[in-house]
Length: 269
Image: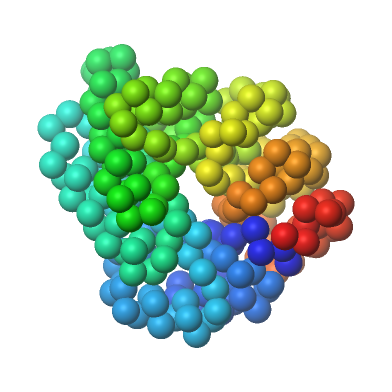
C-alpha cells in the first residue's frame, strides 16, 4: 500500500470499536489515518494507540458544535470567539499527535442570511486559523461541499474556494485546498479541469464514489484516470479514502489494490 493513502476511520472499519480501527487500518496496509473528530478521547490515549498501531494521523477537523455549528463555525455571525477556541483545541491535538493538516469546516448559512453578507466573516476566520496554525507548522485547509449532501453549506464550489484562498492570502494567511474528488464531481460534473487548474492549491485530497459516496468503483467516477492525474500533479500529497463501504472495508479495498499498479512510478511513494 503506497504510504500516501489514508484511511478515514470515521467511515472505514465501522464494524469494530473506533480506537481499534488504527490497528485495523495498519493491518490493511495503511500507514496513515484520518480522524476528523478525535476530541472525545484524551491526547495521551490517542498517542499510545497510534504508536502501538504504527500509523500516523494525517488530518483532523476543527471541533464542530451541536445545532447550528454542526458543520463548523467559520461563517456564523456571533461565533468568532467560539471559533478561535476550536482553533486552539485542534492545534493542541495537532501539535501533540503530529498532525500536519487541519480542516476548517465552513459552516451552514443561517436561515434567512445572505451568503455574500457572511463572506468577510468567513475569510477573516479562515485567515486567523491559517496564521495561528502556521506558527506551529500546521496547514489549514478548506473543502467545498456539494449541496445535495450538505444543503446550505457556505463553501459550495471550487471556484468559490479558489477565490477564498486568494482572499485569505490577502489577509496574511496561507491556507490550502482539501480537494474532494467526489464533491467536485457532484458540484461541477467534470473533475479533471478543476484538478488541473487547482492542483497548485491542494494540500490534501479525498476520494469517494459518485453518486453514492461508497467505494470509488461504485458509480460513474473515472477514478483510475483521476488518481493517475493526482499522482502526476501532486505526487507527495495525501489522498484520504473518505467513503462508506458497501459491504465491509476489506472487501471494498479491491478497487485500490487494482488501481495501485497503474499509478507507477508514483505508487511507490
